[in-house]
Image (cartoon, rainbow, N blue to C red; front, top):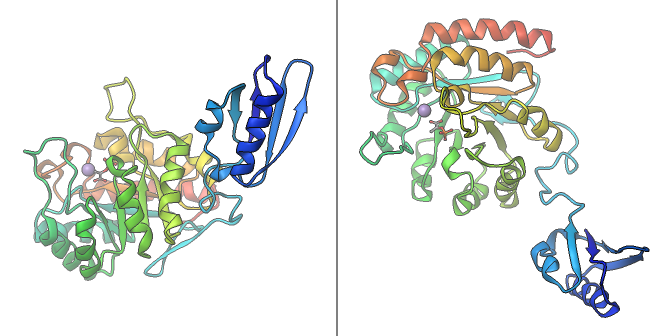
Length: 338
Ligand code: PEP
Ligand code: MN
């Protein structure tokens, strides 16, 4: 941490900063220039309250030099982390496409969707049983019964189950119904109590980016999970809010290489909630894979025009299959498999 003092700083104020750093367990290096005095803090700055330092008399600016996240940082773990989901590897050479409907509706729908996932060559299945809907009058998800339908459909094909957790109180049901990967949705990215709870179990967690979260906030949210002991975290870029209304969100492709640089954890992309229209999904998927995503989370429904949720953005099983073919070509060019 570097503390820049203002031009009228007094010796007493410099002493105040040095003493405060001592309270936090850090040493100081005072550097007196012609125009400015700069104090370098020596030691672990993560416990130092930046705002408090900023408020001290004579302080003009405080700059952190260390990253506020540790466990999720690439500097903590140099190699890419590969997460094992029932024998399926996410974060390695093989790109994983997780596909399935926005929400679990009926057993027939889930059975048909599971067949579509397998036929397309995907190895994991998605589907929400607890849905975060904008309106309280919209379908809220099939709940625990939905978890059951999902488990029935997926287990026939040994497909790992990926589903969203919105409330800590559902966690027991998730464990009971053998959910393989817990999804934390965009609206809950900074639900810190929820993050702490999923940090205590050892199931892989897909952490979606908050719809207006910065990269740093997203990494810190992941650090909450990691700090609890669960290091099986997968970042999922799903588009951020902007002024544009043509599409649902702006897919932040830049976030992919940035995250790959900042963290050792896998990064996947949800092109469906980014574009919000099925016809945009192939182009966004191709961009994501080309930019280095370790996987995709794609909405597919056996009959999209009958979907109870996000009908407009669901691919048909045939469209998913043809997308997988296109992605194969891109994966090959960048030295990956799909
Ligand atoms: C979803 O994946 O079903 C979902 C609700 O996504 P998001 O949290 O990104 O809106
Ligand atoms: Mn959806």
